[in-house]
Amino acid sequence: MIEGPVTGGARGWAFGRPLFDLAAHGYVEAEYFLSGQATTYRQAPGSDWGRDGRWLAEAKATVPFKTRMLVYRPADARRFNGSVIVSWNNVTAGYELFSGESGEILEGGYAFVAATVQRVGVHGFETNNQGLAAWDPERYGALSIPTDDASYDIFTQVARAVGPERDRGGVDPLGGLDVRRVIGIGASQSAGRLATYVNAIQPSEHAFNGFLLQIYFGRGTPLEVGSTIVNVDMTARHPNADVGTLIRQTGLTGANLIRDDLDVPVMVVNSELEAIACHGVRQPDTDRFRYWESAGTSHVAHGVSVVRAQKYRRDFGQDLPVLENMNRVAITPLYDAAIHHLNRWVAGGAPPPSQPLIAFAGDPPEVVRDANGIARGGVRLPQADAPYARHSADPLAPDILHLLRGSSLPFDPVTLDALYADESAYVALFEDAARSAVAAGVLLPRDVSPAVEEARQDYRRARGL
Image (cartoon, rainbow, N blue to C red):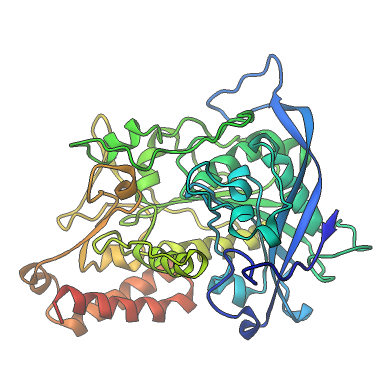
């Protein structure tokens, strides 16, 4: 059953909504509740849950649930491009993280659905509960997800509630839009769950037309966890550990492939950090699979942290620290390019262009770097080919919080002078690198001007201006 649009509550707004008014971009923002019975799954008896990702699941039981969907859709149906992006919201922090307000989504005419599918999103952690039901009991108190075992089927039900064959006789979250494609996306922890969905659930349910896994560590998550919350200890420290050792010690090393008998396109877009984790489970591009890994980037970038801190201040009334020298190369423009290509692909057009992989050497393998400390190979965003700093996945401290944030260590004036005569020379080289990224298909033309202006400010900051 679908209820909505949902309004009111003690707070008066939907949790995690954008910091700006979507109406100014020609979009409608509305929240809905979805309830019913969700199937839980288990590994099919006698099947192999192995490295190849060809996993077989079977229905185990059903549990009742009630959850929410936050929908952004074009107000003018003529602007709708036919594609709905359904986000598996990330709950690693103890509250929901998602973002559907990028240039590609809003200017490209997509509909976006932020789906609450995991228990923590509603019920939070036992300590410092920041789940929806605690954040606004008046609005979200009736929501319930009893176990993450139900998350896979809840995700399927969300897709069908907004898909081409949805029931339009009742409440329609898409406002009558002519939906032709549904694309599932998930980042970080959610990408791991999405990998399991792709490998074990999609082959039988066929609810999605394509998938995008972002900053994916190369391993799926279990089908059965019961009441257990599967999460990474963000406070654990590992003294004197380099990035590769930290990945291994925290259990983030890749373990399985995305199955190679896919019925729909799947794309993985990774930063340098997950490229290290996924080195042992890299797989070649095919007519149904694309894999990109980006040099000089990390799991979380400075700009994303700034926006997250602003939302945290609005939603929780508290400050969220942002590390000054964490990685400053935003991978979000790469996500937009990936969505652009993937949407064309699932509609029957050309696949995304294949990209070179980051260079590794040694045993255990380590990233090969140039004289400036930038990874060789991989997707080349302009910051990698015209750097003002040593951009990398190397953490500023040996714990997972810093591991996810990488680093951007500005070059000293002598190095900057050796690389670039002055600011105008630097900007000219950056513009050349941006044009190369556009030609390679990893940067959309609309993202060039903002990147150049940011680069100008970065150079000035590095020079202390």
